[in-house]
Each structure stands twice: as C-alpha cells, then as structure tokens.
Length: 309
Image (cartoon, rainbow, N blue to C red; front, top):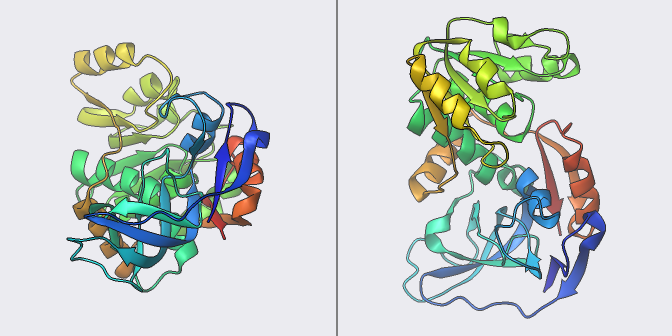
C-alpha cells in the first residue's frame, strides 16, 4: 500500500510517497481501506517540528479518516468487512495511507447522509468542538457562545454544535466569510480586522481556536461564572490567563482532545439529524499532501481540506 511519509523534519517538500506492506489486524483491531483523510493544522506542525509529538521521523501523518472495513481481527464484534466507518488514529502510523489499522474503539458507523469526504473532515475538528461545548461547557439553550476563528475547521463545526444546543452564536471571522457562517446559523458576526471583539459583552462561553492574546481579551466578554476554552493545545504559556480568570470569578480550560467512542457516536448523531455538516474547501489527491499542507499553513482555509486516494 501507499503511505505519505517523511524522512526528516522540514517544509511540505519533505513529504513523499512510499510503498509498504499492508498491515494485518490483530485482536481488537480493524483494517480500514481509507477513502478520505482529513488534514489538520496539527499535521503540518508535526511535519515542521513545531511540535514533537512523535519523536524523530520517519512517520506517517494523519489523525482522521473515513473508509470501508477491509478486515477485522479476533474479538472484533462491532464491525465486519464492508462496513462504512469513520474515526481517528494516532500516528506515527497515520491516515495518510491507503489502509489504516485501528482499534475498534476508535471507529463509528459513517452517517449515511454524508459521503466519505465529508465524514473524514469530522473526527478531530468535530470532536474538539463537541467535547468543548457539550462535555465541558455543557452549553444550554439561550446561552451566548462566542467562537473565535468561526470559519475554520473547528470553528465552523462549533458554530453548528452550539446552534444545535440552542445557543445564540457569535463568531469572529473576516467579512468575506460572514455569508458562509450565516448559512451555518451564526447569529452575530464580528470582522476582527475592523472591530475589537473584546467590546462584546454578556457572553457565557468562549471557544478560542486562536490563542495568543485572544485569551486575555476574551475574558472581558464573559458574564460572571463564564468559561473560556482554549482548544489550541500548544504555544504560549497560559498561566497569566488562568490567574486572571480565577481572580475574576471565571473558568479557564486548556482543552486537549481525548477521543471516545461515545462522543464519536454523539457527533454522528448530530450529522444524522441534519444538525451538523462539515464544510470542505478543497479535496486533493493523497499524493498532493504537500500542497494540502501549504494551504493549511496559510490559516485561511474555510472549513477543511481532505485527501483522497
């Protein structure tokens, strides 16, 4: 099978096509023929050495995918060959490949009302939005939710999750993306290039996909007892934000993704009910992973980028 691998840390040009043996599932594992794989900012951050989650190369990037079960190992009871599934995988044996081997607990049935391309755009960004807003913030009807980077991979899904929970949703994004976000259900939109979002008031939940100075500025928007959730996971020291939040009677959560089968199923349920649909800006061949990384690194992607065989 083909994989996209890298032998060194560097720019998009270090990504290369390699041939390797197709893995065989052992107990509790499922072999999936990948039909599409989502591209996330974490991918280029690992490739470039911005974060060192997987040690030294070589490794195969890619955390999320959609595909068809090609084989199962002993003790797999939830899936069988031919099932359409989507899920996540932990590199260094990632989803930039023709086949991926994963535990059965990392899979869910693909919602029938979306194709593999859109299903592959869901697991990482979708679970981030879902866990932050549903599990941590426990968003309730009538609350005001501010989503930073609302048109991005996590942001555009967070807008939809919050709306499905009955919230009033405010999003920050460039003006050119406002029509797109209104179609997703956003109630108010702020062009951060011309307007200071920190002047917004009476917010109950802030979902921060940007970090940097967005954290301390966002605290000013929150109601007493409100919560700021930073989902970026890497970068600046957030100690000052934590201290300022605590002193102001606010909650600050530095969120890290912890995929669970229950939350993946919950995400699939929102899709099946028509409350959630990922937007895909660009679909590229697997062999053009380097181009996908170049696009991702611009920070201007609307929704997601997806690779297909």
